[in-house]
Length: 116
Length: 109
Image 1 (cartoon, rainbow over the protein chains, first blue to last red):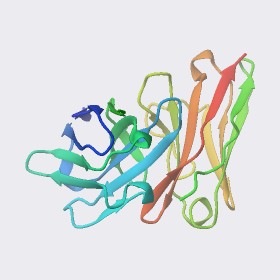
Image 2 (image 1 turned 90 degrees about the horizontal axis):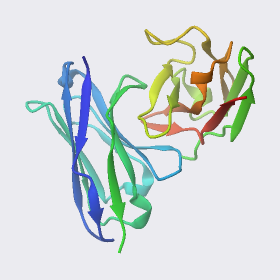
Image 3 (image 1 turned 180 degrees about the vertical axis):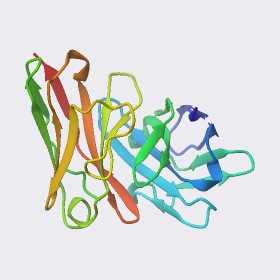
Image 4 (image 1 turned 90 degrees about the vertical axis):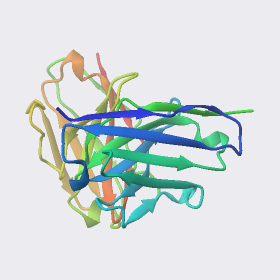
């Protein structure tokens, strides 16, 4: 059974940093692109970032470029999102998702709240 | 990277059909056959319902169907059931990024 479990969310002040993690199991992690998708409270879904199987390609939505970094550790079956210079508008539930030109499996999400 | 346009809400009685539109551009919906649809119940993670425009994952009822014409994709729910009441989002590959729709709330009357 495919499982994706996010962790690392929490409360942070504007300008602060957080690192999200996603533990994957039940599939060959190193064979898939992976993504982070977020959802602000009461709002729609927004794709945040993608990373290729070997980590050699990474893509970001314009609003997080230069502030967020997606990475992965295939030996640990883990996906990460380093978030720096956080802003109030980054407040959201962050989901990790497996990518196959679509998002076929999702985690339960982790809430990030940016507020003073 | 503008969001795809969906109606804010649609509604129907049990047994009826509803269709949700998803309008993009030639850079996303019109440019690739990689449109997918997600169902999201309150407080839950999204669930894949349709991928590659019209394919259904295993376990998704055949009441759900997808199509595309030009820059507009559509999701049709036939034989509407109470458990179909949820938010629905379209998504398109936009090489190499992805863009989601604005979301549609489906209400079963």
